[in-house]
Length: 207
Image 1 (cartoon, rainbow, N blue to C red):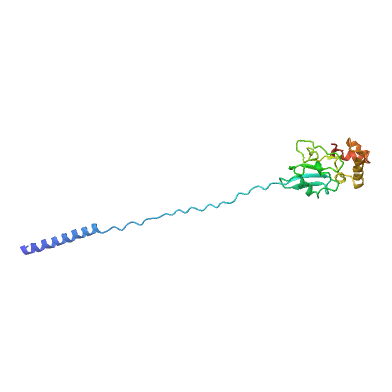
Image 2 (cartoon, rainbow, N blue to C red; image 1 turned 135 degrees about the vertical axis):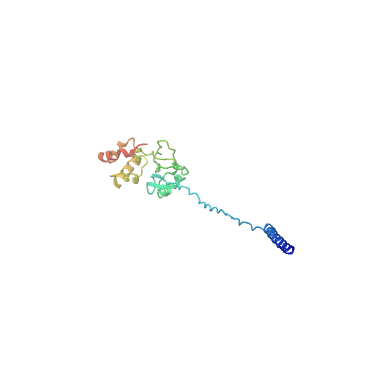
């Protein structure tokens, strides 16, 4: 190989090395594309609140007897007073003695309010409960009301099994003419048959 040929070969080799070096340099300086970022979004479900439902108070049962238009057991709202019980029973009759009734007395479930007629002795309550002026006795453990024969109206007597209007009127009239009954047996003196008394004796009391 001549000197000119060796010179040409050297130049070609130098050019190839230069191109290779330039390619390596460019590849190192080229910017690297950033990797995509994965964004995770957490969605918290909204908690819906509901209003708390308050229990509805239960009505109370009160027995109204005596000098009222319609004696009987009535359902009243909690917090009711004796005057509410009288209103539920149609109000007092003309000869009702309201001076012996505490109309402002609060009532509770299972109580009896007895309204006396004028001239009748005011009955005294028995049992552990308070009184609304004149209040009848508490019920027996079996839940049966005991009727005070000295404050009962004709309507109260008629509410007993087997007692009609005529007999009830006689029982009230005898008491008004002769004074309070001393015992349940005195009802026989007022015209009540002994068999009828035996049937209702467990429902009666004297106060």
